[in-house]
Image 1 (tube, rainbow over the protein chains, first blue to last red):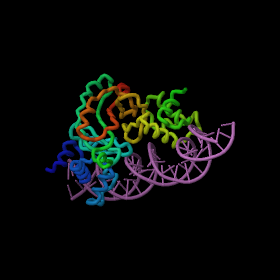
Image 2: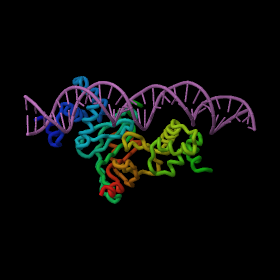
Image 3: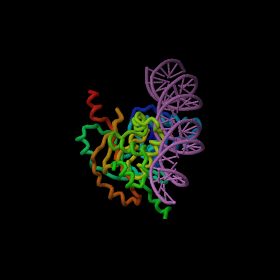
Image 4: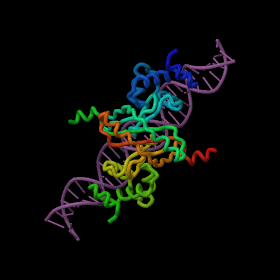
Length: 136
Length: 136
DNA sequence: TTACTAAATTGTAATCATTACAATTTAACA
DNA sequence: TGTTAAATTGTAATGATTACAATTTAGTAA
């Protein structure tokens, strides 16, 4: 059985080809794409795909914690498969987003505030390695 | 001399009444307001104020690191005086944003990636204490 | 104080990501 | 195979932010 079908089945989500290709795209592209990037790419092979469907699929996958949405770049949402705790770096120059393996052990201290924590996002912003080189 | 005038002077920013009232608002309101919230409030006492001016003032203050912009709520930017390192909690229910005093000592580890880090944002999301009480 | 100039403010229009919605299609199940 | 609730599709609406041109003003120097 296809691995993406299994993911949807395990989460009791109705299996549709549109959801499968969105999920597959996110699994195979670790670029933290926007909804529009996902749509534009998939549209080529699936001309009948609607952008609304991409948004709907992303919302459904997000709600089930299969993916997460990143608010790192401010003016658009980016999406990422939920593969273990990690943080993100955003380059203000080229706009790329890359994973950062950082374990923050401060979550425990949050309990004193009394809020119910459901998501933890660590966003670092600056100029990426590649852009730094080009500037010299 | 007015304390906000001093802040602008120290940063070589031209002093305008609009910038002063925006800065004062952020200094006296720790609610992490949106541009529109700032505008709507200030408009009452300053009817000639333009929303574009609020955006411009925020951009200028942000560029000089006097304030910071938060991308925590996804669909809008929020603003915060830059008073020392701290993180933020966002309530998915009521939309409030509150400060969280957390020291993350992992910044040093970031050096190995080779990126130039200019900003660090810690965003926690969930349900706030107040909303939790109301739900019972 | 006055005059000058670059920069700031203002208001309107444009942009662009996201959401709303109604009509059509389809996945899941009996 | 038929039924039905849910998903997809396309278009229109929304809303935050930005672009831009005309007007005003802060800062400086005579």
